[in-house]
Length: 427
Image 1 (cartoon, rainbow, N blue to C red):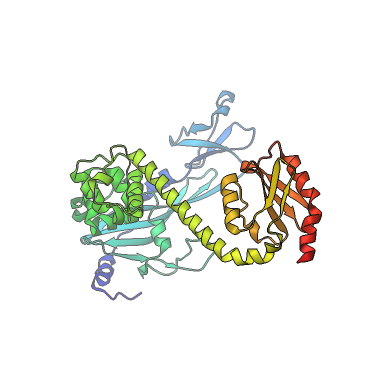
Image 2 (cartoon, rainbow, N blue to C red):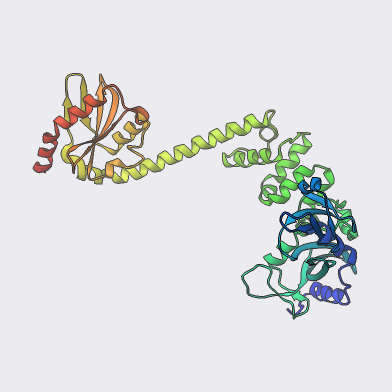
């Protein structure tokens, strides 16, 4: 990629003559980021240090130990029973350096080769370098990516050059950071003290250099707030003005995640999120739960309104399908069973009985006829009668439970199946 902007040209010029990754950083990566084993054959007492190649024999009492210390190099090793004689490992790591007034984040891959009886060999290859200036501008110098089954496929035959940033480079830049670091004065000025607080260095640096809100949060010492807004940038945009007002009112935000949820919900229900009365509740959890309930109720009202609108559009279709059955009423002296004659009656039945006769759109089922069984005007069960089989297929009380009158209701409707059949023939 040819440098076009002034900053890109500056980066390319600064990158010339860059020294290789320091040997102490490579040693740290090999020591800290790879595993260290003592190999032994199954049922054997002889161990081989895969770091220095030293072999020694342990006692029967030591055989149960999962970890041993090599008597030659002093390395703490994990015991592994295997017949393998070689071990290959690799790991990515990052280092922070400066060059010509720019912050440089260097990403490298360390590889270790272990052979039984030999000293381990370590190699390192640099993958990319991120250059960041004091304003948060960022460019990447790196190896060319190639097509392959893995994310980290690079053309090692080509040299490092200016590249378009992509998810691969930025992902690799999140790997463990070598603890010895050099930083530009602008980062120290904006609050960076060497602690990343579990954040990716590239993301954190660009944030505190580009946006003074992150700088303010970092310098305030509320690291939990800083980390939350770093990981939830949308919350920063929505809640920042409210956050400043809360701080001016000396309000202690103990749970920043819960507080941001509360601010978003306040905005959703139309409350003034710059009013300290709303954004600084005495009991944050209670205020949060109250808003959750209010929004749930609002959503339920909207859902019901949509159901009613949909039902109103289905009214004509329902009457065309089931109009011939309107007026049907069966009784045995105690129980009255009548057909439901509108979509609204289905809604009322479902709401009162707490089942899905309305929400599941039984009124649009051509093969079903829905009855309501009542005693002294009180609903007892809802009956579904099959127009294919001419029998009751289900009869349910409140919350789909059967009542003591269940068998009597089913028998009453089934005994009048011929009347329903006559209505169909008449139509």
